Length: 114
Length: 111
Image 1 (cartoon, rainbow over the protein chains, first blue to last red):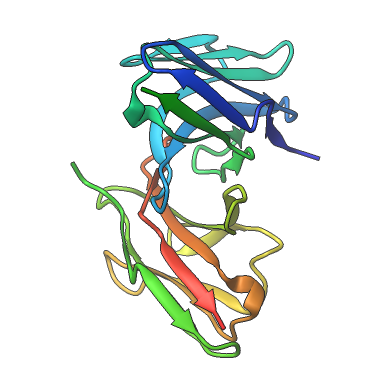
Image 2 (cartoon, rainbow over the protein chains, first blue to last red):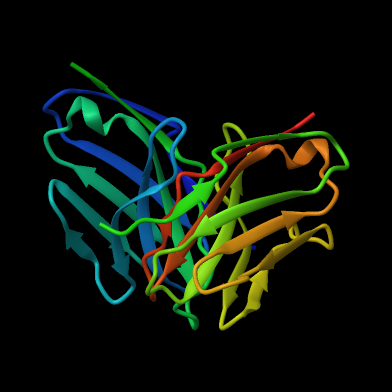
């Protein structure tokens, strides 16, 4: 069946360090991936996305890497700040329908120590 | 910046009662969704809506659930007879194509 999962449920980093959050997906037909940040009591907030025809995409302080060979997705946050503390979810969308549902992973809680 | 809004932020209801959760998607978006998140768990897809009809639904979205777009701005989720296990955060989302933007959620508590 299709599933998206995360390698590490919790990640604790020092302020200023770089963070790497990993995600494995099992549906090789997925063509679109998103990272969301969720703060306590709030909805998922879009961070960055990547389509399957790319292997890297950069945003402001964030980079998403996609390795289709091993079906692995990662989110890199540069110079992590206390405001980055949240739960991070990866999500995938199956190909064929640009408005298709997202399948979410379990989430990784990022804790940034000042 | 446009955003998805949801009301109410918190709804408490008794088991067996009907609830309607409301959402106003981003105005130029074409696809609308409801997801739910049980406390401490991942976000789960319920239903997607496009061109005034359901385009996909999950096994969670049974006959007790329905969605409606009663006018040009609102998108609602109705649960006809709530059960204890319906207690969760319910998120509405919308997109013009790929990236889905989520609302702040409605916390539904069924007692």
